Image 1 (cartoon, rainbow, N blue to C red):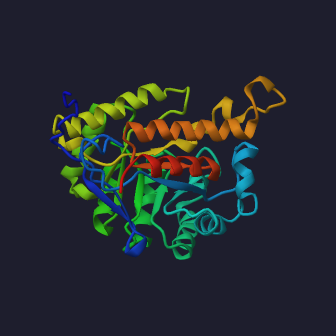
Image 2: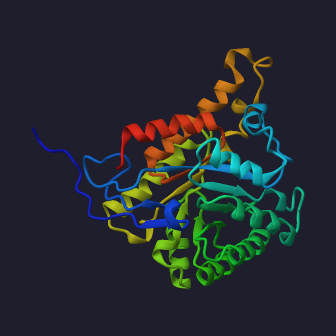
Image 3: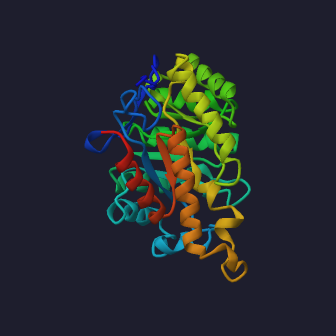
Length: 313
């Protein structure tokens, strides 16, 4: 029988988040995700639990229920994710700093960051609010107070990469390079960061994503093209691990939020939202995601089971 396995000539760089025994390394694969019959996959995709720094959340009850006792305390929330749900990595959403929301000053929000850093001993990702100026201000402060912790900072765009990149270089943190679902724009931002002086093992790619039924096909296609360019066409400017903050996209959709009473034909509200998040995560993992940022513990349990069954060491 003819051997139809692909021959890959490129590889994805390894990036390590955190320090000490709980540090997590992603990337390093020499084939497409879960195609370990064609190459090496030294590290499985990992799931990062979301923790918000505010309880002013427009969430469906399905999402609030697992965290109802800690929503008003980000530190307790982070500890619950680690101690009760077994989180190996956390994404701290700095929603309180949103200029269109609470607009909490950066010097106030940083106090919560310091408390979380002291309370948990797992790798941390800090995610801003997609406001160029506010994110740059916040990430510079985080880089300083988290010196020596090897955290990830994002999203970093072509509009604020110099400010955040300089802080990441100075304090040796990870950059999340975010581009709007486009192969060329992703490559361009990576080049800008490398030229700035960010090291190759300090970059994660965020291709941005949509939820199931909301542009996931296009996201999948672009992520797949990123991986083909890096692994088959040897484009080392795209050979970085990918992170997808899918929770934000899934849980804002009508299908994840609408009540069973209002639309009974759509099925049970809780199960529907969990399935939407889990299926979105599966698709992104297959497309090449190395880190999946998720929200509901049951969705996370489902995807972790799949990851264990499908691949990696």
